[in-house]
Image (tube, rainbow, N blue to C red; front, side, top):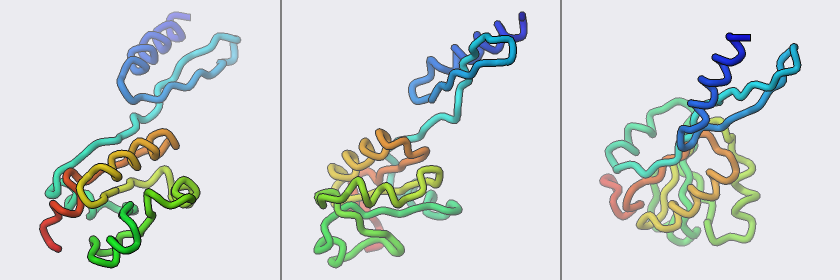
Length: 139
């Protein structure tokens, strides 16, 4: 019983973290225990940090500008999912929520909103380029 209470206290501490997801499970003796899951990441990063993040394995790079803006120049290997398109959320559903997402737009407004949508859709890791493509050094 002490072990169950200890687990509950530790889980409750984790639950107080800002982005931690908490799951409640019933254990064999009928008690319910809260278990903290991996913390979700949703943050704005500098161009230098964004560039480093691009080297991560299985990263998904998303440009949320319009197709015309995208055609005018984009970061290599970026997929274009227009934030203003009617099927924006449907396009996001095709992405892997467990793999890191790097998102950008022209100056950071749309990508910030897109990152919030991704957060609401339970993506694990979302990194937003501060200042957008206009701050990208190798255009």
